[in-house]
Length: 466
Image (tube, rainbow, N blue to C red; front, side, top):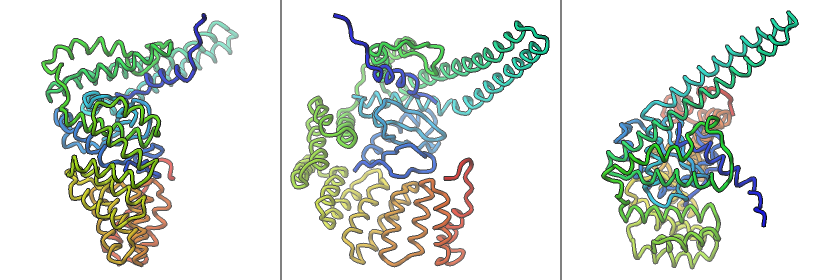
């Protein structure tokens, strides 16, 4: 019996995971994104953001990045990937979903911190400039040889010129890739240092690279190790294995409470991004009963009867009455059931119980108050949404709700300014300027709102304007 050829998409997936895994330099997918993330499907969720921040905090401290203002961004993408850009660390939901333990994600974060602490982004930019210069020089030399060959009718010289031009470009590219692979190895080793400093195992990092190696082997793809920007997975494992196994923390496991939060995060991501069938499969494999109940309640909310979802969520609250995210889910269900006053009460409890004071929960509370619709509720909605935006200034969607609340109260200039803010943080700068000009017509010159509108009007975007 002959073996069937492997599907092209399986090979492509493995190659893409190897080539793009940066490990290098109510959950909602934003409809419009902040200026830093144009075209990136950013996920916002108070529970997941709080958990990932808890993973990162000790690593940031060990890497000397506690005061660096590093922002963690969740990306709605099913692949196992993470990367850094500027002072932002992006983590795919696929990585969070596939990682079975907190330690695996903590290892990813530690690696990225190696790039941030090592200044690899700036050095990579320098290397790119160097590679570009090498390619230009090689091209000029090749062009000169081609011209000389043509003038003397010397085919050998002309051929040498062509080879010099193309060979120089290839040399520059390979030099850059070699540099990038070196930086990846450095970041891997820095990650082990940070994990040891925080008393955590590097086993999760090994498991991640073993996953990549397994996917690559199953794909049957043949990869030239000199034509990729990251070391091959087996090389990374070989480089780290001894270091990881020598650590006194090698056998240390994640705390049970942290593992439970991780399991609940995974079922939540699955329910919102993968559908009911995939979530059911994950729930059957989950060892944590509370995570199973949580996933079932979310799936029922998304796909079933609100009354049944509410019953299941109330059962969760009996087990953890101070869990703000169970209250948030309760509010989401009641909004779906068209009971905004009850939803507002649930969101209010979520806000009061939230230990990290996320800016997202007050915005949800404000939305429920807007749905109540009375003048007093609308005024309270403005206060709650504004409070959320003070903590989370780049929440473009939040400004749209604030604009709506101001509009229903008849405060049109403030509604225009909030609309301008939403467009600004969504990257639609021309629209932001239009609404900022409209807002200024009804605002007193020199007052904070007028000044902020002027800032938006004066903003100059580098590069293409949306």
